[in-house]
Image 1: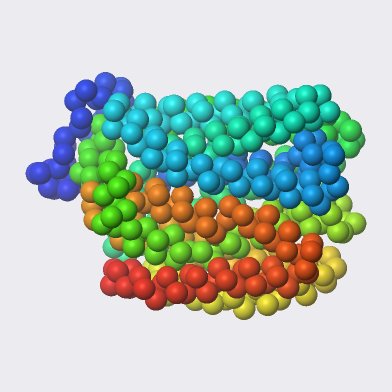
Image 2 (image 1 turned 135 degrees about the vertical axis):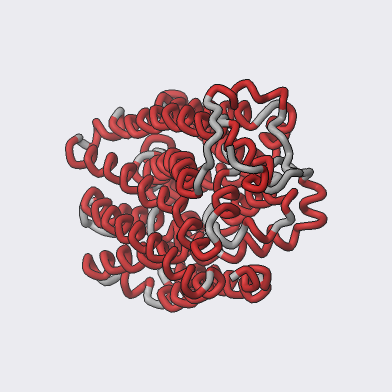
Length: 447
């Protein structure tokens, strides 16, 4: 067995006795490497991103017709995007609620309840009656399930991303920071592929009646597998020692906000450009093509899948770049490049298939390079005892401010005032990132 120094010194907190039963099921004494932690992070986030993109794509292709048939296509899509944002509003609530559950019971209990709630909400959506069957009640139920998804996503924080960042070798922090982000393009590839396949092989009526429900069933099945995989990791005594040694346990939210509030805000805004771009190359262009272009939607989804592959490669590259020049420089440079890219948004989207394809591939490339390090600027800013809760709430705030309303705002502005306003929206995200990074001197010192 490794010496106590491996886990943070002789004073490291022991495994909490009342909740050690589940942990002892898979107990082992061997050393856990950062690469093993990375596997846990990827498993944990892959199912969440798949859920995320299944709902996002359905918000464009399905929900306007199924739940808002009384509105025209644009209004129906805007209504669907409004409900889409509910999950991001609910995430911080879920984080705080489930932190309390963890303090009262254990990390395993919290994770089990959160993922059970996420899977239940997802599968209920697949069974929801349509507006034509039960009227407004269908919209209410969809909204409630979307809120439940957000609460569950907030509650599914297991601390492994923070543990990965803290255990990464000093000269490979950028590389390990990007590993968990690979789950995003993977989730999009699978979700987009499922919808593209069904669009190609089902009639419009079949797709809208029952075909769209199938990806939600798949998401539920993946959630079940991910639950057991993640529990097997976090319940081991070795992981528990590492989590306890780094004080990765809930901290009082009021005290966190009072003493570490600036770190929460700066951490959330540091990657604002990346989070704003996230939905402007995934959800928004899909809605624009559906409303204002004649190219087949399945064909456009395939282009986006190529974009996701580009993003995955660029996420890997971001780790190498960040370890070479530093994460602060990487994020700042990419924010500046995203600001430049924003000026070309109208020209590319209005540039026919060639321009639209270029927008997707370049946009996904920039997203991969920036999003690959979006989580790396968070964890180490916090004092050790606030790190677990601080990293979770910072991530929630980043999604809320940067991504929650991006499809709604971008589509609403572009439809009513022109695509130039999408450029301004993306530019504002880049400016916010650059401003936050200029204040985040702690990141510069660590680099």
